[in-house]
Image (cartoon, protein in one colour):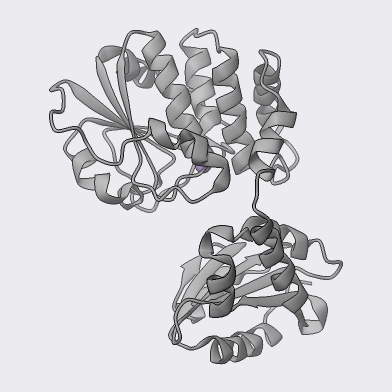
Length: 325
Ligand SMILES: [Mn+2]
């Protein structure tokens, strides 16, 4: 894992101005919000004025406590010397309704996604970094800032969020663990980060999970598991009680499974489908065949079909999927 340190221009940008507007992506997660909060504290410690913006919606349970720090609209009077920092966004459209405002300001982008459509005047983008908070940590350290316990907790929370509590990290990712160790040594607690990310869920969300696991059906000799959510589930449990990450994790732990398909009735005539894979099976091209897109290991599409018909469509495709040997 090779992560470049921030160039001097990046540190200069964070020193040169007085008023910083920090923006992060739609449907925020722990990484983008913690990046914003930690960078904000660093800037404030250096006498800067900071405003945090996020377009919402704030869905994930573990981020609710951050919500009040984030404004959903620009103030009426924007100080003239304000500059923007965009966090954890691969493309400008991830900024939601803030995209136009940001386009009119000097912008530094700090991100760990590779982008098909790069934007911003200055960029600190490291696609091999496991989280944006790790890049914020490297900025703070490069600036000679002593990371406080509060800041360390934020930074560890972001790192744990995007790595699935380190589960997604592979060999040669010691740099991420070394960064985590520095945070833990100034008081961040992995135990508390874990409890914040994985605890606090409603009973309804556990029951919905149980329903979807009970319905899981084996296809392609058990290499694929297909499950689905009905409109009745949405009415009973609510969309806020979905916990797809844990569902994928539990199903993927099945002995022969390498592909998961989750179909959700969106309306009486449309169904969204998400695919996950491991061991190199390409679900991105599968989603593309169905008019969607994504990556090799995570992809999705929206079918103009009721749930029943959509399940038949996916079942056919998955039965003939090309699995690597
Ligand atoms: Mn991220």
